[in-house]
Amino acid sequence: EVRLVESGGGLVQAGGSLRLSCLASGFTFDNYHMSWFRQAPGKEREEISCISSNGGSTYYVDSVKGRFTISSDNAKNTVYLQINNLKSEDTAVYFCAAGLQLFAGERCWVTTAQTTSIAIPNYWGQGTQVTVSS
Image (cartoon, rainbow, N blue to C red; front, top):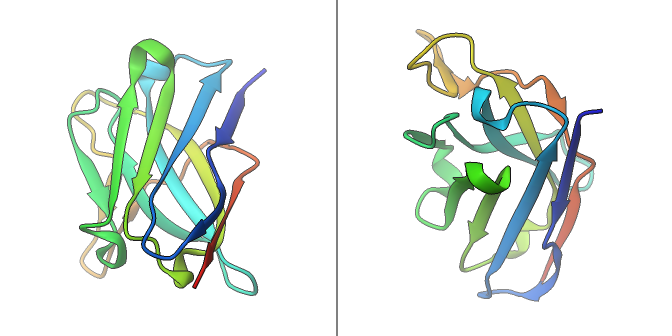
């Protein structure tokens, strides 16, 4: 059974930091790109960041660059999201996701003539709530 279990969310004051973790099981972690998404109240889910299966490349949406850092520990089947200088607009449910790597050297994001986005994941976690108080 595939499982992605997020943890580390909570209530934090603006300006603070959190490290989210996502423990994966039920699939070969080394073969999957890992990513983070979030969904704020009343809004659509949005992508945040991804990391390639070997941890060699990362992608961030512009809105989180400089404050968010994604990392992974393949020995622990875990992906992390470090969030610094939290803002009220970071309040959301944060989801981790896993997408199968289709070929060697594949990046975890897809670029077209119009846009760049995280490759569609195969598996999703249940999410962890992050609430930022001002």
